[in-house]
Length: 408
Picture (cartoon, rainbow, N blue to C red):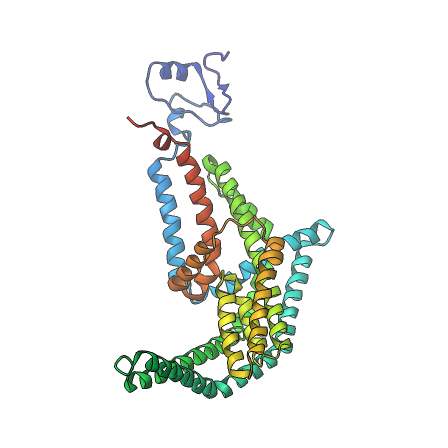
């Protein structure tokens, strides 16, 4: 029991006296002095700091909206320079488990980060030195054969129109329609070939930009070295009231995102190598470039395999004199789909990924439309975050009276 006139310590660490207790009991407001501060006069309580007030709901909403607006403005204003930093963050996130294993094995974190970044840069240089000349040669073959492909498509369209004219009569299909279809088919194929050439050339030119060759590895090294410190610092910034919920949702996002990114990266590399080697083995002239493109596009569900199948079958029909070669090319993609569905995806992805294929496709297209290539890189992480939050709020809704109240 506290003696009147002498401070007593409460469980919260604040000091009060009997006079202040009496004033509180009488309903009069009082201010509590900080622990460890001596009382020098009757007015000392008015000069001492008061206990922090509880944040209002308006303040919480203002903080959340402010963070979202700041992130949106940052993407809008700095989207043109964010690419090296976003790629560096993705590399650091991808390599963090390996760096953690090396650190637990006794290797210093900075040396482990340097070793992994050097290994990644070396692998990129080997890829450029070994495959870049072959890909350029295949692009040259594609450009050289483009007029032949255009003529073949035009002749095929004209034959189909002539067949329809024989079956339906000249009143349904006239000469003007035949000429229009033939010319438009050739123009469409020429546009597709030109677009693919510009896309492939632009993609490799993108990787030759100084910012991606120099800035990205440097930033990735610093992020990978300090990744535990960055995570710990962000964890300290979490509001205390919601720290448990936020940590649980962050762990869920990390589980889903890490499984998708690392598993999808392995799947794309394996499929790209399989398609490139298999299509080249069956004799398709442009098998290397088509196989690599089909494998790398596999991160978009069904887009890589369908695009690669249509392109490869079209090229095989123009190249091989018999249907046997076309069947072999189609068989490569059939085997690739079996390998993808029953071996690769169950092994590297399994049931850990809770991102639906439609949601991933929408996120990729929406991110690309909003922020370009940076939006494509950020699409899947944002889709994972939104998916986790939606499932969290759905669980709360299903447990709330708003859902459980019986009908009147």
